[in-house]
Length: 400
Image (cartoon, rainbow, N blue to C red; front, side):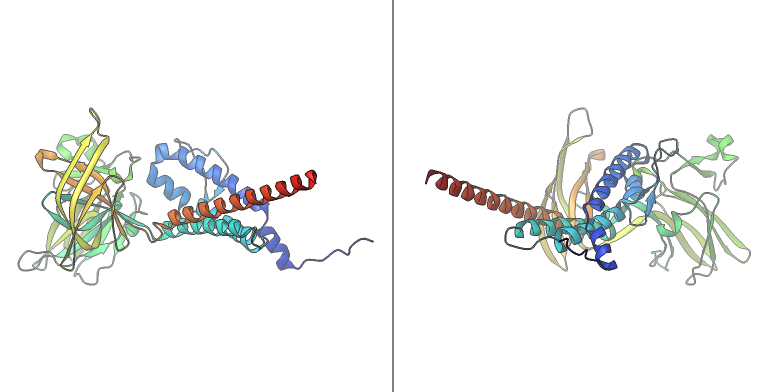
C-alpha cells in the first residue's frame, strides 16, 4: 500500500529551496566567475577600483568589461550579495536542517566556524578603515591619512595666524562629480558662497606658459592650470584636483586646489583671512606614535623590501609603551593594527610609513580557521575510530 503524499506548506517549500544544494552550487559557480573577472579587470582598473566594483556592498550587479570598456560577459550579481545568499544557504542547510547528534557534532561546529568566517568578511567590508601614518625618525604623529579619499578643508585664520577648526567637504560629495559638474556647498558658518567645478579624480598641474596649447582649453589661475591624466591602477597615486569659486556679493575668488599642492590657498573676505586645502582625508588616532629608530633594506638593484623595522613608543594619556614593528609583525592596540608598510631615507633622513587598519573582525577568520580545523580533525578521528572498531568486530566474528 503506497504512502499518502505529504503536502508541504509554503514555508517548508521556501526553506527546502533555501537549504538545498542547488543554491550552494550556483553560489560557488558565481563566486568563481566573479573572482576570475575581478582579477582580470584588476590589471587595468587597479586593485581599489576592482574591489569597489566587484565586492562592495553597493554593487548589486556588475558587468565584466575589458580594457576598452566593452562587455565581455553577462551581468553578474555582486560578490557581497552572493556571499549573503550562500551564508543563508549554509545556515539553513548546514546547521538547521542537518541531523543533530554526537556523530555530527564536529561537522556542525565546523559549519558554524565557516559561517562565522563569512560574517567576518561582511563586517570587514562595512566597518574596516585603512590609512597611512608617515613619521620621520625622532618625530611623532597622532593621525593617519586615507590611501584613497580626499577632502576639501575650509578654515579661517585667527589673530595669531593659526588655523581654526576646519569645515570639511567630504570625499563622498566630491568623488561622484564629473569634470562638467558643479557642486554648490552650503557653509552657514562662513560669510561666503562656494562652488566646486572641474573636479578630476586623476590630475596634474602645469604652468600655462610651458604648455600654451593645452592651457587654451583649461581655466588658468595665477599662471597654472590642472588637466586630466591617465588614471593609475594604484589608487593612492591618483591626485585629485578641482576649481573652487568663492563669492560674496561683488567679491569673487577663483581658486585651484590639487593634492599635488600641500599648501593651503588663502583669500580675504570682510577683512578676515580664510584658507582652503584639498588633502587626503585625515584620520585622528587615540594615541601618539614616536619613531625612535627605523632601519630598512632592499634587495640589490630593486625597490623590493627585504627588511623594514621600526622601534616606536606608543603614548596614550601619558602612558608610554615601547614596541618593535617588523614586517609581518605588527603592533596591535585597542582595535588598531599598525603594519610596517614603507621605509626610505631621503637625504639621509629615515622615515617609516605605517599602514593603520581598524577592523573589528580582524582576528575572526583566524579563530574560525582554528575552530574549523579542530572540529574537522575531531570528526576525522571519530569516524576513523568507529571504522576500526567495526572492522575489529567483523574480524572477531569471522574468526569465531
